[in-house]
Image 1 (spheres, helix red, strand yellow):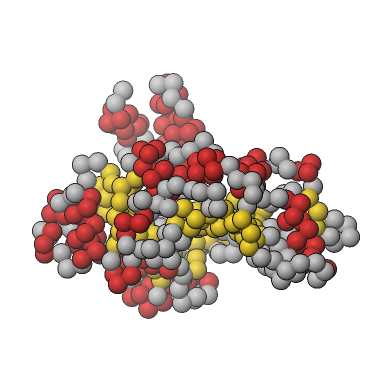
Image 2: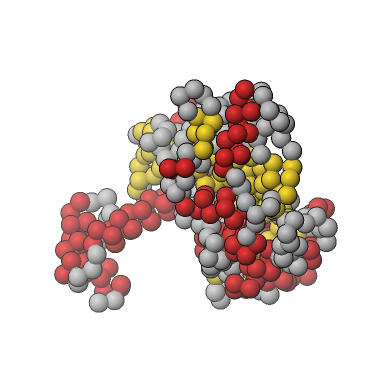
Length: 411
């Protein structure tokens, strides 16, 4: 049975002559059809509902942003299907008033964090004519997100025109480098990818195809073109969570708990490949707590596995997408990462002095690692600074531990 035939049978058997995912009877009919065809009904119905909810929420957000109330409040578009940017920090009551005006007094349920799916933002759930809508009133977009939104807006405003008539030099270069004709596109052909499944999975096994995972924008041409957008400040690439094996004991002293060293195998591998000594991390934190001992200072790592480190860094890039980075003066750097070798070329070569470590000490509770590489690709953007990875392990609050591991780059 084809998809069209399935939809026709479902429509024919539904109560109103057309099916609805909000009607329990229609859902029961669809389940019977799928089970008859020996298809996974639960998974398919769950996917349909989620896809419909995401579409409803996107459409509702678009309606809010187009309204006079949304514009006056300074609400902005975000990549996540369910989030709306709140750069002016309006409160939930003000947002409720906007929803009541734009959607003609819907019944709204406010879901507090963390049940909202966010650690600090409320979710607003209500029904429209299209169905269930869920919107998280999030903080204002950061600089990276602002650059992505600006780029998408300029792309959508430039399609349909000949290349030489596009008013934005960076968008001209983008289309020219990618090799697509903007006259063949419509504004609907360029959109955010959404926020599903965007977490990079670092691996010492090397790079994999990450086109659909790390892309921020997609252009629908003959085949989908994935763009990963970086603003001029670089970006975070990995948020690994807390380091479990450096803890405070009952006396309030930092210790290395070797029994927990294998709880997060990737963390252990990062420590060992970069030559990070977890005992020295604990000793440095103790020095910070007691204010007895040495101050923190940079030193070269003496036990680095360069092959493993290069594999790890290449895995953070992956391949199968266009790397697009903002440059000074409104310029843009555009490069396609093609296959495994393309990812390794993004990293470049590492030498014995590539990895430097700064352990905690009396003057800081952070453990910092920098890895400088000579990237033949990124040197083409006329930026003479080396590609630098930075591993930061620290507690961002006033506490000492647990310490969180994050990795970011300057490009």
